[in-house]
Length: 367
Image (cartoon, rainbow, N blue to C red; front, side, top):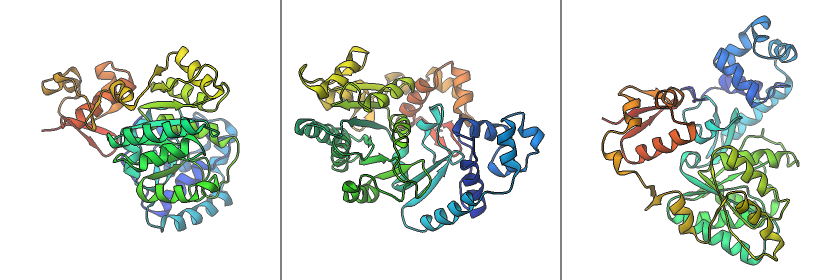
């Protein structure tokens, strides 16, 4: 799916998106089906009940044709007030600035609430995750890997939890690539409170992002769900210290399902926090011992991905692209490439100056 060329620039538009987000029984998958059929939220809410029933169950269709619920109105007022603060933004699925890698996952959020540098969400990054109760060595490893990868130009993505996540963000902030924190609360809250200072520094130098409505507190079910965004925003996921039943293994599994690379740092066979990493390696994760190992797997050289020599000449993808703007879905059909492989080749061509990314998720050859 590709983004539609529009942005949330009026209270009316935002109200429509918030109402769609808060509809009972409508998750990201159903919302995408409605958007694909009718267009933007105003067209969805103007559709007759009988037509809506062709796309969603009767209970959902009834909720759509009923008057706006108070929760959507209260969220609109809260969100508009939040947007007045410098650095705050809301991206919708229809926004040209919506992170392209998230469009590849099965259920991208309708709305992303962003504090800080939203452009980091669309830059190449690596997720670094692991135990909240990490060892001193594990935390040193997380900070060192994150610093080296950020210095190489990759954005470090993690979840703002204690332990490995915290050190990954700290290391990312010390490099050129900075860091993105994907959180499991509303973007106006910080959890855990011990990371309040870190969150403020990330908002100033990097980016904090959440799919959850403002004011939503930390709840257990939020965090496994937000993990799909940590992996979805990244080109690869590095696991540093994880017990056999660690939540980090959920993120690693999601990464594999999303077509992302998974890397794991080995440890002692006697260490409980190495069990999860060793299990991942047995399942096919790439064993890494240094940041250079990750950079080589990503073919990342000097801050940009290695581009095949053939890019300098006509390539099959450039030929399929033609000379007019085209969306990723159409290009995938023309080229026969899977979406993950297609986006990787497009990124390489973009960084080589051969392809330009246009608003609305379109791509065009550079003249």
